[in-house]
Length: 198
Image (cartoon, rainbow, N blue to C red):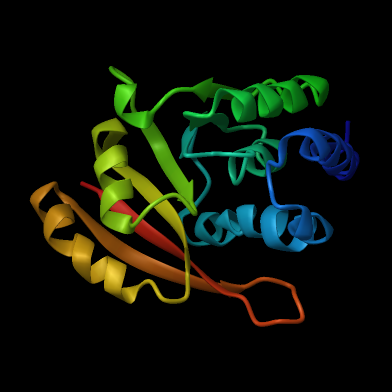
């Protein structure tokens, strides 16, 4: 199935699930494309700068599957795992992935801190917690020269400052903040905060 068709089917399946489960707020349904899918796929800005030779990606606190599912559809070469402690959300996104026949996606109903003996090339997190807290979840699951990409709103500088000490102590640092805007009438300024684990 072509990507255009896949995304079309994905949106349809997602809205069906959302009518039962509230994966995103009802008000946001009309902005599914702009606020959630476009935002999830802004990781392309990272790949443009740092290449796309990555094989594994973990999305912490994936919720309704953002950014994990759009990434899995767009980048079939990456094995994507979405983790979230809410079982009904994970069941919903696994069901969507199954119906789309996505071979490179798996949802896990658990907490990130319970994952053991596994590391990833990229870890993402969107609308989950403050930067330092995300780093605490992510760093034990990162291999050398891997990246943590936190999706953040414009007001992220304070969080970066707060996290600096912890990151330095754990051989990690913020190497980039990639700015972008969502394609909406209102101005939604967003950032990808890129942390490298050395």
